Amino acid sequence: MNVVIFGATGMVGQGVLRECLLDPQVHRVVTVGRSATGQQHSKLKEIVQADLFNLASIEQELSGLDACFFCLGVSSFRMSEAEYARVTYDLTFAVAQTLARLNPRMTFAYVSGAGTDSTERGGSMWARVKGRTENALLRMPFRAAYMYRPGAIVPMDGIRSKTALYQCIYSLGRPLWPALQRAFPNSITTTSQLGRAMIAVAKQGGTSRVLETRDIAGY
Image (cartoon, rainbow, N blue to C red):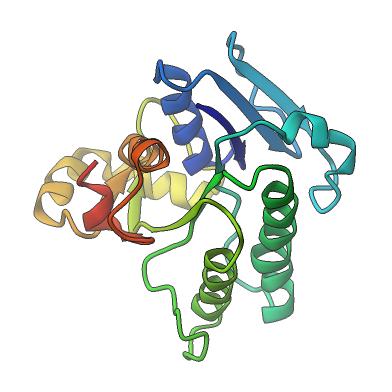
């Protein structure tokens, strides 16, 4: 399986990248982002692309792919709906359009979030925008598209969040996370568990197009 990861320098993306590099059935990994991951591996091809809205110059590297793991995302804190939609909806849709044209047999995996509003009409701005993004992706002409809605995600294997506040919470709460995950398996997952689930579904398909934390735990 040949895959591309968008957002491989983020906390979730780092976890997905690690699992892809460990999986013997993943033969080629392309990462696309505004900065490099700094990782080196025989099956890894890193592409640093300043303008992710315009992928014309790298289309050759984006052909012949079986799956896309789209892990890009930002917090909606202090953002207007238009600003948040620009990054969350517009960018995701632009990338997906290019990939669907180049790889119509691709599986597209999108990291969304617990509480996403599929009706697009709820009171939570971020949930509406995420819902609109999910709905647009599910309508696209991929072989399949899957939406992942994890709740709390615990970074594993030395992975750190780029958001200082989140990393502080993870560090302080680290001794409690194993017990909390056992107590709330439907609300808490890990970067490694999410990465393995995304790879498994890309290989063999999933039972649902929208996967909540409890579904992710089944892989």
